[in-house]
Image (cartoon, rainbow, N blue to C red; front, side, top):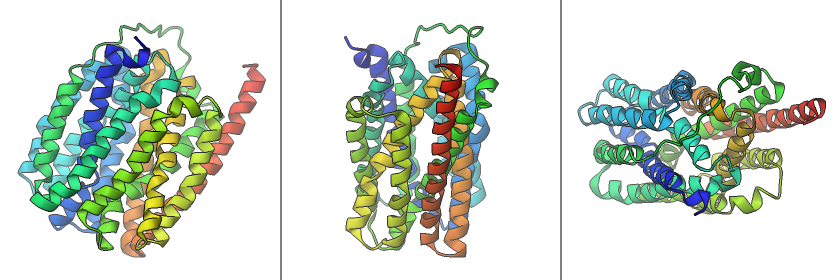
Length: 391
């Protein structure tokens, strides 16, 4: 049996499907539900930014616990169960600050899921990053199924059913999490390189800066893309479809990853994804009423997310493996989705209200350009380090 189809890998795949199904129903439609409750664009931006802000510190705490205990699968199940219990609070709150409090409590434990899932995915594949796409695509499938189903469902039942739908899905996440077995791998902490020493390397620092800019750019989309389309007259079903188009192309990239990742350098592909992201967000900003161009921009998600994310995980694995794996993944999520996501969402909300909705996406395009520059600097520093160390 191949590594990709081992029992552990199948359990991780099922979990990824469930978790990203939850993300696919909750994240794209949360801004619409918040709008339904009467929240302003600034309040929606604060909600999104605060959710991302929790990822600045919390993944590092969860990552440290996972590396110390050596049982990330148990930590994942416990945090998922706690998040599900807390999510039920959305059934009873409508006032902004009560909603905000419940969201923060849920995110306190949801923030553990993504970095731990990535750690378990790499463990299940025995570190073979060329197989990563075949496993990660199950998360994309879960997302696309629910984002497609969510549009027609909310058109029929009303966006007021968002809390009930989200609760049902996070319960499924818990059921999937408890099925993930331990990896059985014992890492030698004494032989591992210094975690802080790795962070001080210039190539690592520029890498994290590049990830910060790229995710900050995408956070503008995560926070306001649905609302942006809604303001331009698109139905909820069409909004879900446009989200799904990007994920369908994303799945194709993940499925074929083993073929293309062997033919180019990880850094080369990383820079390609950043270069493509610049015009992608510019298209959204400039042509919101052109469905064909929005479809093109959606299709480019395959490169700006799937290629970028795979390369980020592959490059990261070279610096933080074994006993450092969970903390490495946690740092990546903290810097990119935590700091980057917070800054991106807050800046987008200010531009949305202060200038125009399209300004949020022009900002995203500019951030990707900065990510391209810092990504290039990381590649140069990495090559210089390799030459000096003889690696």
